[in-house]
Image (cartoon, rainbow over all chains, first blue to last red; front, side):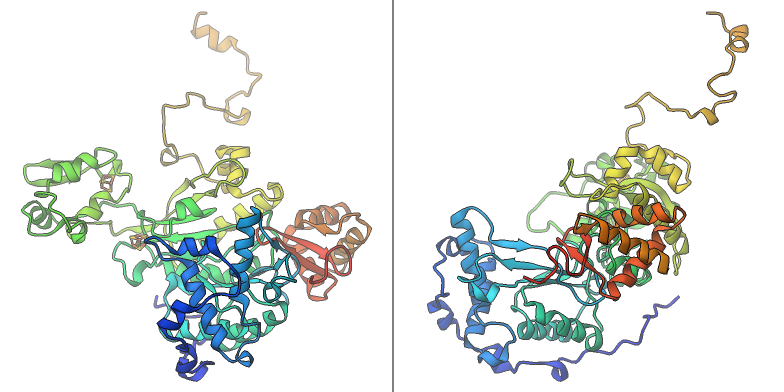
Length: 472
Length: 76
Ligand code: SF4
Ligand code: SF4
């Protein structure tokens, strides 16, 4: 099925939407930048500019200078906002504590997320950052955008915000850093009604779903990550904008186990593309790799001579389940033992490809270390076919949410809830049987917990029948 | 719907707290209407937000509901 957007999309044209002229955007010289001093003394931040890495301080100084030179009526919040931000940060270094106050009731009408209130507690010293609210803009799927789009949102943010943004937040959103309360609604209006953009999630919401580049450019993608991300983003608008969960909830979509959006580490529900038939092998291409005609790893690591490609050492011996071997000059794979690590496919992409019977694996419960430690998602549904409109996926999502909303404590992530109740309970919620793929280390724990209803005769069954056949 | 909204407001108005987790609202509603579903409670809470009787209070990482005019509910 060809992809259909839910509403007609207008191509954004920067020339029609732009706020600033080229002269205004390029309003300083490199010499001016060199001699430019921000209005506060910021020795520790100057220090951060040194060294080989790009520095936000250097970027901030450029932005500070541009705003300094723009006419004041060309910006809706004060020109000094960047300078005050740097000044307050220096003061926080001096004091060893933050001067931001977080949270509050700011937002846009009807939305419980997407805006995060922030205020300075040094408003007399730094008046232009008295308010410094963050806005999260839901990024396009796979972060595909063109320069018209980028320039347009940059102009909007220069005009109504600080001009500083963060590409991208860890949930994937484009983050607008720092504006005043009265700018929130006008920005939201412009984003929604003119630019066809939406705010992302924050707080106890479904957070902005995000996906890898998927079928748009990657031949390994086992399902259309962009389409599923788009569909679930739209389908769960209420969950995204009106918080009623115990805490945050994240979906991330990886097209294959390479995990380019790291869904396994960063989402409560990770979708990872997978196949259930066999890895496709082109034996002629295998020979070409062995003969040195095709560069391994797609030609990466080419800066140094690593010697002749050795399939035994570089592929077969590194297979984590030892399920590959050579029979003469034919490569063999015992596919039922393959754990889908992608290593062999990554090394010899022209010879090996994922199978053709593709779908997703669902994993649950990753989180960063706030309470307890960091946690990876647990493989729970080894394989599922996926077709738009993904009703089977939505059914799973809703079972999980119903349980978590019922049993989850305030500020308890799904992964912590699963930990508290145990995997067997979670499987019951999902109405699926335990499967071998869920077990990481089969011999680590010898205990099997039976339930009374699973045992013939229950707990009170007489032992006599057993004893009649088995002496003590 | 109206009875759910009333249950939420009765609870919010009588509570000593000024901010509530969604689960607090849900529990309060279930006391009056034991068979109320979380989704219906959420719809009622959203309606109260739209009527500007309740407001969202967010720390950025988690969100609570507040009552207009009580506690820290004005922009500062
Ligand atoms: S996760 Fe897999 S499918 Fe997606 S971009 Fe990375 S390699 Fe390609
Ligand atoms: S994908 Fe990984 S586990 Fe599977 S055959 Fe290749 S190297 Fe072995």
